[in-house]
Image 1 (cartoon, rainbow, N blue to C red):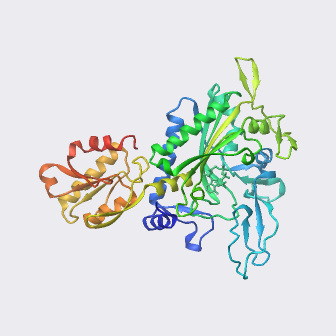
Image 2 (cartoon, rainbow, N blue to C red):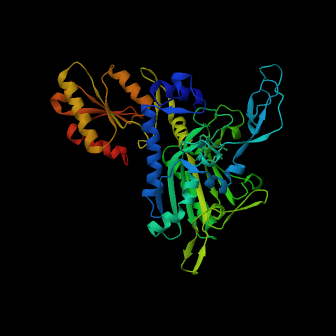
Image 3 (spheres, rainbow, N blue to C red):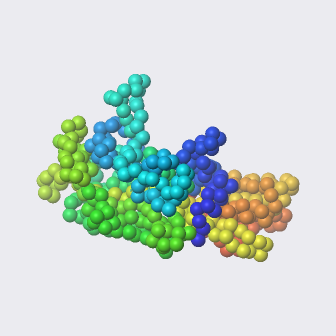
Amino acid sequence: MVDLDKIISLCKRRGFIFQGSDQYGGLQGTWDYGPLGVELKNNVKKAWWRRVVYERDDMEGLDCAILMNRLVLKYSGHEETFSDPMVDCRKCKKRFRADQVDHNEKCAEGDKHDLTEPRPFNLMFKTTVGPVAEENNIAYLRPETAQGIFINFKNVLDSTNRKLPFGIAQIGKSYRNEITPRNFIFRVREFEQMEIEFFVKPGTDDEWHSKWVEDRFNWYVELGIKPENLRKYEQKPEELAHYAKATVDLLYRFFPEREDENKQFDEVEGIANRTDFDLTCHTKGGKLVLADGREIPNTHAVNKLTYFDHETNQHILPYVVEPSAGVDRATLAFLMDSYFEETVNDGQRIVLRLHPELAPIKVAVLPLKKNHDGIRNTAMQIKNTLMKKSGWRTVYDDTAGIGKLYRRQDEIGTPFCVTVDFDTLEDQSVTVRDRDTMAQERVKIDALQDYLAKKLGNCR
Ligand code: ATP
């Protein structure tokens, strides 16, 4: 299986992902998605949205502001507890996340690091809103999209007349001042999340939790992740957050080079049963209960976040199941799982066997000879017609010989190449080449779109 280094090199070479602020030496923990990366990432998000919103009858979408009133993060518990344990080396002053220190690492000042006791480091990015930078104007960049969903529970409920169970989905940026961002887009300071809060009646939460674990696992597999590279990990009671009744993490084999197989896997998504913890924190007259038992009454919230249950004639606080995935980690998993190096007749090829729905480009139309007007114009025309009629991202490329053009498209995961040659001008047919099998088939131009539509399935 491919390791991260090869993926990083492919991403830079072919324009998937670049270091953030590269032109000025970079900014640690940030990455910019290039021409192909933005397509791939958008396709991951579209595939998720289609699956969890469009294809279900019990979901609504939402898109909240990234800047949040400080009170949201106060009553959610983030101000008090959203921290990682940090240690410093007394000799070289380097900082580490206490649970991620490599105790064999050499200190720049010689011998091993001399580490302090761990102390909490809050991961939220603080800023001020408005022209006066003072304490009262402090706001945070959201560290997760979830809080926006909780505080809008009543707005969505009242405006849609939903009945339990129903869920709210959101995709968007989140920010965490990670102590040690690393491993490419795996751990970064600015990232995107795809989160669902699924509200259910208490008592039905266990069943819904299991259903969501299955559904989310299957989503990755249906989009091409090999089941042997994806694991469900049920958190042990001592690992659970104090408010969670159960959490199953989906782990992907991000680090295949590690000797210990268990260490090869890390989290791409977590599915938690959070009970009514969050709605209790944010509801008018509610309270935040911290892990140490302290209670902080909510004296600021303006609405009750309750649901009127017509069966029991009671106002209840729904329970919530939260499938929370990282867009960047999912994108990385799809890249890694689809990467293959193969020996073929005329040498080596790198191929991304991306699911067609995720492929940045669906079809490339290639002229066999670029300085032949008839061939070039026909190829251009086919490209324009295909794109307009189907909506697929279709490209035209004549910047190299056909062999090289095929290799380029293989390397970025384009499922089909359409080649226009001299015979095309006589028989109105083109050659369609399949990325995975490299098999070629002659297809009439008139029938091309239907032919490709059958193969590409649900793609847009
Ligand atoms: P970790 O333990 O790896 O720090 P977490 O358990 O804190 O992750 P959650 O708060 O559960 O993560 O966030 C949900 C998802 O958001 C994660 O499964 C992951 O895919 C993504 N995510 C969280 N932090 C980062 C980050 N710093 N960079 C990229 N993705 C992230």
